[in-house]
Length: 141
Image 1 (cartoon, one colour):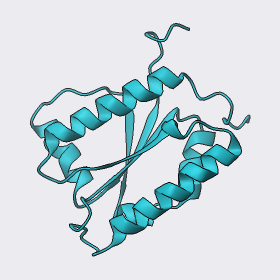
Image 2 (cartoon, one colour; image 1 turned 45 degrees about the horizontal axis):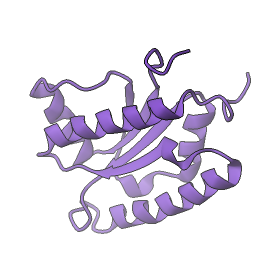
Image 3 (spheres, rainbow, N blue to C red; image 1 turned 180 degrees about the horizontal axis):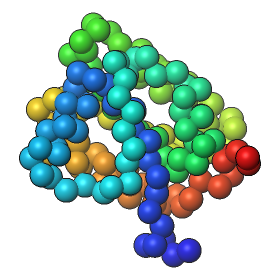
Image 4 (cartoon, rainbow, N blue to C red; image 1 turned 30 degrees about the horizontal axis):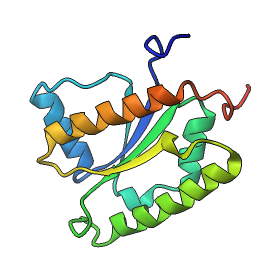
């Protein structure tokens, strides 16, 4: 399969208060971005268990995006700081398992940053497209 023909499947865990609202603003503003993203709305990016990320990759996702409030602006005071620490754990865990850590990315998007959300999705999609399909970690049924 040629790199241009590959359309990656990306699971995006979005914080309810900022990133999900930013994604909503992107849609209501009719800003175009790749349709390869499947959104999972979570109350806080700090509540994302690293096992959820691994599970998404096992179930066939080619990439995962974790997006939350900007540091210092978390609705739950310090949830995004927990998410940032967990991201370090996820990166080390992926390297240990043998998966390119570029398949999992993190971003900070506020509710008023619709255009930034579209840019983040485009960047993540292009980065995952360069890595190719996730075939090494997908669980056989």
